[in-house]
Length: 247
Image (cartoon, rainbow, N blue to C red; front, side, top):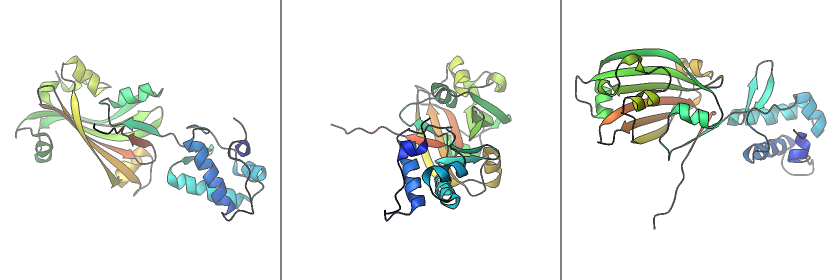
């Protein structure tokens, strides 16, 4: 990788903008233009200070701001890296496994709980299931490579799967094999503050900003076949929608 000064240019003390903000702006632009890629390691603060002829305090202040924005991340004992963010398109109905695989990442899950029972009042309101409907529930932590990405809670009507153990890795694969993969879905995205248990699992801090994505998936005949709630750290996932004009 070229030196950072070659990528973002030199800092200018004669500008009205403070030096740390100049460095921040240059790094931010380099990340947004993909001149710096996810997981790229930045040089140590001492080396950056020498390269840009500024104090280490200036460098640290610039990096602290980008860490707060979620553009950089620090790893204890390893240094500072460009944050690995994942873009999720709202225009395509795909599973977490398919999303990660298409981006060259290795998806995996840690199961927190699998259970079966009958639909709860909250689930009934969200899905339209009649009281007493048998359901399977799946709760797991989703990873991309070794990074925890999402905490997922999913409810599926029992008719859609042959058994609770039919889901080993990908829920959508299991539904596909049973002939009950969703053909369309409604999704709702909203900002939330993550709780202490959620941030512990997602390697964040209590009160971190998060994203809650609720999905209701439907079969071709209109029956609900999936209701999921997925919690994401706000600094690891971007949701993208392609918009067109109607003519």
